[in-house]
Image (cartoon, rainbow, N blue to C red; front, side, top):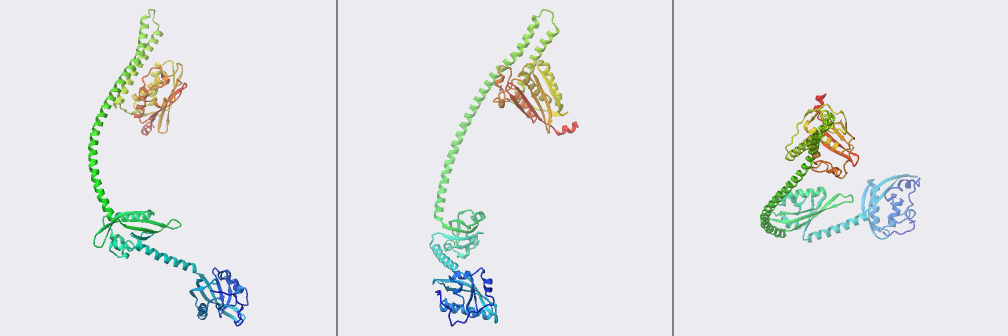
Length: 545
């Protein structure tokens, strides 16, 4: 389009004048598209800013002119003919045409033309309203795309593998001509889900399942399976596919390649068969070696176990004998000393003297009985023969009996108690629980200085019953607390004080057999508090109510 800026032709009819000069501007200047207004002689009455920008002209350079002033004769004639048709029939039309631009390039426009009317001094006059859509870049892109498609198809036809394309739902929409060689079928038979019919029946379920999973998740697809021809002959193929995503990450296409791997697959199968046989021979030999090795190891382990057991028994026996010898010697010495004092006393024996010696003998005997009971209880625990027989009993009564017995033996200590908050009845094994608190009270007396106070407190806490035994004795090192309930363990702070190291272990076992627990808090030099927690049975609560 070679638009020249020529003067208005004197021979042309004068431009149609509107009684409202700004009417056309008010109506069409802000239109969304380039817009041109022509009179019934195809003369330009108005052109908005977008159209001026498109053609590179100013408004005053185009008003009153016709397309003959700007376009080649054949293009101008074609435009005038369309204008006349719209004016004559009143029917709008949509025309796609190629127009020569001011710089000489060919541009593709889609023009929408319709008839309208404007008021003039002579009455209403018809006009043509032309709205222009520039399709030049779109058509150029279509041409480029068409060339690219032709190039792509050429590559597909020459590619040794068979490319294929599927939509976002996994339906095949395009496949290379190599499909015909692979399946012996027409390409259109593979479209959609038609390719299912070519798969080996044994492979089809897994292939379909894996492909649907890939389509659902957008994961890569890569499988080897058999494709058969119409004659029933199957070959191995490897099929790979990857998704193409849009800007928002959604899958819009699947692109795949189908590769013939039949010969390679057969070679791999033969190699796998050979390797499988070799592994079988190796595995059989390894099993024989493992069986023989296991037999030797089992015998060695049994010998080691027996030897270790023998050593442990010997060590325990030596330690037990030494411990019993030491522990029994002390109360026996007390009994012997008291007996000798009674024997040597020639003067009249006072009641107080007899009471003191009797108390010494009674305390020593109680210690020996306690030792014997602990040893027997430890043996029953190790043999697993100890049993807990619960019955509805008064825990406070058991505690008071234990406190009274210990107070009678250990008159140098004060044992106070607060048991008012304990329930009336509790499901316990009275004898076993008595052993627990007798041991705790014995330890509290043993490791507390004479004249100190020992406090026993009992209370109910929801579904639990708790009893604490607190002393102000020597305490226990923090490092020793975790080991305090282990059999035969004695804390470093107890060095020089008689003890077997099995009492607290027995206490812990009895409490746990009741379904409870025991905890300890201690500060070296300031005392120790043991807290026993026992479950409270709801049925007892109802009976007591």
